[in-house]
Image 1 (cartoon, rainbow, N blue to C red):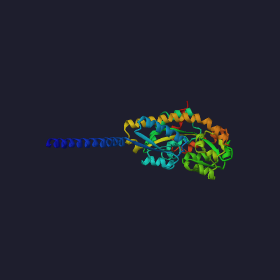
Image 2 (image 1 turned 135 degrees about the vertical axis):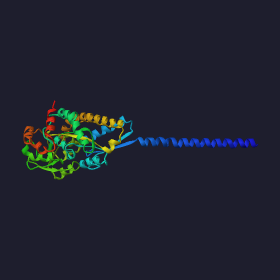
Image 3 (image 1 turned 180 degrees about the vertical axis):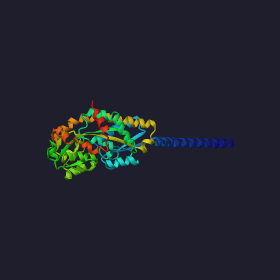
Image 4 (image 1 turned 180 degrees about the horizontal axis):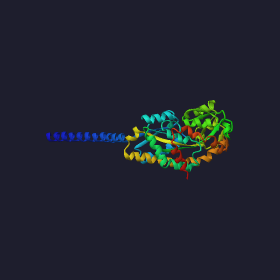
Length: 342
């Protein structure tokens, strides 16, 4: 009897210890793994001012997909479109002080007030065509400009596309420079744009991009200038029924990351980010090129009058605009950009 009692006590103790060990194992292992996953997981917040159909968002979505794939989902990208985190000035400042991880903004807008050389993209009729643009952005000149960004407390990762800009107005056709006389035209907050509109006889009126639709609708400004893709994605065609295909300048979308975020990445993670930016660059260009012809037809279907203005007359009227930024954009840089034409 004693032996049986002793045996049962030993068996019970052994069972209890085994149960405790099993519980400890089941409870602790997932917590440890979860802890490791939490430690490895990284979220990059990317803010921009475009709609979810805008060029910014198209590139951002490609970037997100590519980076998450390259990193095996250890890096996640959360996109904040439609100026959810503020206008482009706020986005640039946020990246500089580390409160926003990443953004993409028009190179010749608010960014030009921080990196003056970006004003070069506001010089009218500097580029012949898309191939000329890409030779500049993808070559040594583009790298030099990104280094200028690095010197201002940010990491310049590359250039996505906004596109060639065209004139629009509410109801007055724009076919020659004289047609802009006295019109209130929205400009980006950079000196080169003030001079550009003055040279055409228009009244330059700064308006934040995120507020542009309402400014056009309410008559704060009579017209504006942006790429065809922007007219479609932001639905400006609803309040602007005249489009003049001036193609007067090309705007690249500078891709910026805060030093705080970039410096926290491992060498491998930095490589993934840079590869994803380049993938988005190439894929976005293809998408926008394919959409351009369709967009023009859609504009016409929405009651928009599309005209082919006298581009030579516009070029002549704006030939001295570059002088307005002579103290910000070295002549050597302008000459290099012109010479890059293939």
